[in-house]
Length: 234
Ligand SMILES: Nc1ncnc2c1ncn2[C@@H]1O[C@H](COP(=O)(O)OP(=O)(O)OP(=O)(O)O)[C@@H](O)[C@H]1O
Image 1 (spheres, helix red, strand yellow):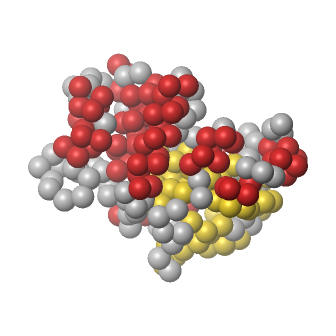
Image 2 (image 1 turned 60 degrees about the vertical axis):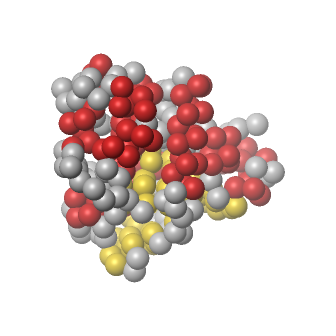
């Protein structure tokens, strides 16, 4: 279980997160919603120990242990993976190289390269292609496959469907559901409300760095007044 409690994150003197708290339970998908600039990416980066921002107060506990103050690679070693906003791939590395940077090709346990290729057959076909040669959808699959190479129990996904064609958005949704079925917990930042409601067990709305609403996804779907108020959807 991940427990974020009252964290305050800053970019220089700009105070962006004003003490949001949330919990991601084992094996659940929690969708983090909110309009642009409300602090979703900042929250993901704060959990993963990425700088900037700087977290000045609060706590991020994973299985009861404090993560704040640890470096991102130490957090990854505790089995938290990240699919960052904008994918963050290396243009000159091949698909295979992206995966083997994190886990040797001969590894036999957990998410191996072979298992990733079975899960993403398209990546197997493109294994010798470099990052810059991949389509948007292939890049997103690679970003997800790379996160899986750390054998995570929790994956932080920052807008995995951003900029993808509708057919790829559906594909990414089916991947999220399959990972959930495989037992992973997922904290999913998602701009598309309907996608979030279809994938998540619970939703949490962030507004100017504060959690302003939390609900089961099944209830949130019927609560148009709240959604309109916080997200501007109709
Ligand atoms: N590196 C940075 N330096 C300074 N301010 C930043 C930086 N990154 C984000 N911010 C500011 O922090 C606030 C929250 O941004 P953040 O990217 O976390 O929002 P978001 O909810 O993820 O939005 P989006 O959907 O647009 O990514 C915004 O006001 C943004 O301008």
